[in-house]
Length: 234
Image (cartoon, rainbow, N blue to C red; front, side, top):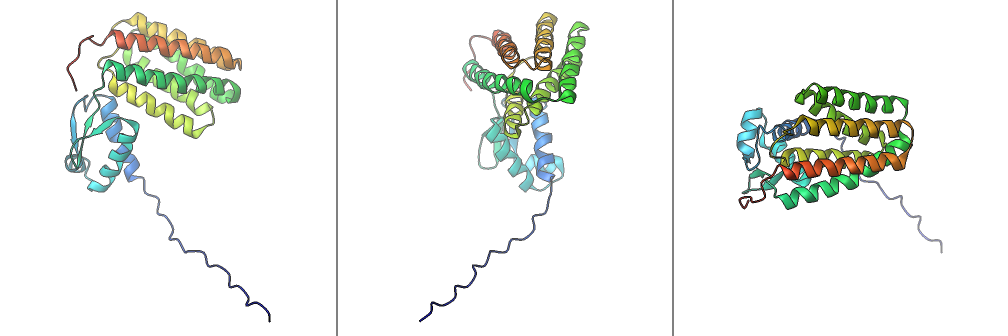
């Protein structure tokens, strides 16, 4: 007696996914407001108020809150609210340990993988950061600083690492309580940018990594030095 012929297994039918970047746009606006101190550390945010201000429903705001909590930019505060992080010295030190691990690896990979165009972008951002520092143009320096680190992360050709580096930079930007007080500090940072860019241009991974490690530790020490040793409990 022959076995019955097995019927083909039917695959479940999935509906096409509609691409909608509303949540992305809401997330970017809130993230930018946090990192630029429009929403300062400790500020309470609510889904209802943000939805009203942005003229959107609560759903994209709620989804943006989930992503912001994952990064660490906000902490839960009630069912429908969050509070902008206000970390301690110890927390900021931990943030820089994470940043060092991520960006040292990014510099190493950038030296190995960056093409001519990517190397030129990194070098240009480093040069602009030096120009901003030497003319005491803090806005120009800050913009070039971000562009420099993001360009290195992109050039790793590792999407996950790029996202993690950007999240780390955002978290640290939101955690800082003040900007650099001395031009010399920015000059030292811009000089480090140029050294890192030069090493990447030469394809020298170890040198790129070591320059980046020294740079991140230098910035960490400057930031921690600007935070009062005694802080109110958060």
